[in-house]
Image 1: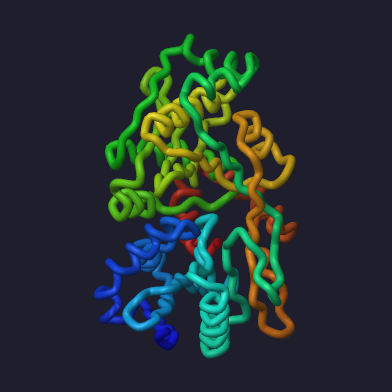
Image 2: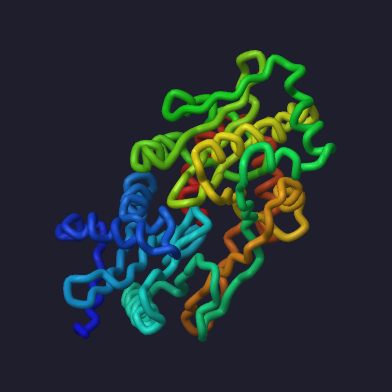
Length: 349
């Protein structure tokens, strides 16, 4: 067997492009790899947010046998971190054997020490030996059948909630860039109401551009006004909803239920086997919302290498030191939140 050789490519590497096709083939053929492992994801985050990336590729001879994409988030406010992959739920090491995984771990730690970065975060589904981990989130996964079977499984109460807004002048639209303004209007308002800085609109445009055949937008409108919106990413046998929002004042009409049913119908019609509702905390309101559709929790395990004297980072809304900032943000004018938000959100993992 050929000797293992690990190469690391940065956003400055001129020879990275020659391996893109082979890396994409590896990602698409490996069951553990997600769409976020594709080189396009690192490049998108560099172009949109200015974050440097380091893409590790393990070779045996000419064959790719392992990969690890890492993105560096560095700011005076939130610290310096290597993450695989920020902004999304998945990432981490993908390799053909545990031995190759271990060698990629070692190479990653060497890079972190060289760059004097105090922690590396791997967003995965399994524990890594010798690393600390965080299990504060689960993703909610629904195995899909046909539309009628899903409808009957929901129960009369859920079905009634889905039907309720059909009495209004409600419509469901599916598209791409032509729906971006509607999507962003709903999404940015909801993020402001949650007290969370919003990403810039161009970030979602870049996702549509870079992952064109894998992505679409879903918008629900009442009398022409957008009241619900979602971004759907499909890869292999799974469709995922990394971002979804509805205007709170319309939820009493069941618009959120209607939107998710419309999304699920379209996902089924596109022959996906699973639907990933995204991450939630156990027993939270979002967890219960997703569970009523039949989704089951799958533990997310975010593994950490930590330099001596450093703990697991806590740059998230659950951190009590951000409570006051969240309350202030919720009361900002929308135009101001949308102007200031992207300057902060780019460094929130």
